[in-house]
Image (tube, rainbow, N blue to C red; front, side):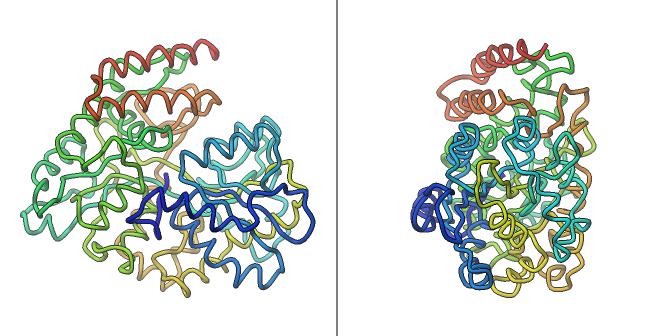
Length: 449
């Protein structure tokens, strides 16, 4: 659920440096005077684009200065949770997603944003894709975050390498087929590994793709009546499969590879396949940053026992209740999620880089349709097919495809993925990792029975 464009080679370290350079006066309290707001956001390509474009467009037109703080995903989640949960009030806008919105809305931490969108006639709230609206709405049905871009997940592969090896990728592959293809692609070019799969700890890093694999293998974190399933059934089978695949045919340093590292590996020709977020395609098809542009094919998220397995996510703009600059913050968020902004990105940076996946109209723009010809339709269909209420083969206690929508999951998912990442690095066995994870999951389950 994350990515990086300008820091493709340098990776997360460069993104962390970007936090310093983009934050202007720093993360000063939002109670300060003047027409300025403080925005905390994840270091993804789309966010780095908005930081690049804001000064000469939004600020120039409105006079509102935007002080950006940009962080890698794991650091962002810690920072934004700390700021909003403790009511520190450092930021007027923060990027969060479908996991946080319903939980934080119930806690009274977020401003309702639907009314701002309704008053802005140029925003066209009705154009937002239904899955995005539903995932970012509270228990009262109101919108509490504005989607900046939306995503599901799919499989990316090098068409030219497959053709040279006489291989064919099914439109709807199974994970078993993917494993066989990874073995055949491994070493197809000097230094090329078969597949990239996230191994970096974090519920939104390794946890996201792994949980989608767990779902389609018939597993779940918890049964409907809150019985933990981490070391049994489909969860165990899927984790053994995932760890075995990345150990045998995955990228170098897999235990420390997140979205950023896999994006870099795929764009630089170091891997032949990659299963991850649909939002990655815009970066991979940008010839200014990707050596693989024009050489990549796209297939639906691999399955085993389910018809589909793609996740559903949106990085979205949210406004903490603590802000004293609600109107200024709303102006920025509405602009950054608007049709006007999408057109600006297309014209200034290239149409493949448009923050898509949130509006139906995006997929009708001729320039975007041309630039996204290889991945646009499959992205939209993957988003539409994602079902957070029924992502596996059994009933669940909460909604969520790649997460469990309870406050404790942020800590649980991170700790369990730390154990599984250690298994990828061969520092422990998969069974030991899952047994330790089961104990943690049982503690969470006990609170909800």
